[in-house]
Image (cartoon, rainbow, N blue to C red):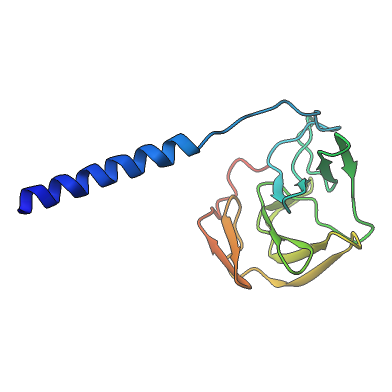
Length: 166
């Protein structure tokens, strides 16, 4: 009896796994290139647009521009805020449903004389295109991960090493 039950459970798991794989497909389509080449940027999506924030340009300078890709018009829109936004690289970002905002945290800010971890938690409002500093990041780091769920922010990982950032 035990072996029959084990065999049935195994078959159920095998069939379930097969069905899950059958329903999962990923398709990639080429879209327009960013107007300005960059790397180390923060990115988020509200389900309608993809947002690219900060990063470094091809001259290895931190930039503060914000672009949104609108798939309906197949264009990158420049949404750079008139508010102060710290040019940073290797930060995190995510869309906060219900607030119509993207939360920016972590990363590295640098000038020719200094390199600093970004300590502020900044909200970028998608309707007003304004930024608001919400407070300090309790775990300031670069390349950290963050998630938002049920009005809670979860921050984990990252590095506080400043090596190779100049």
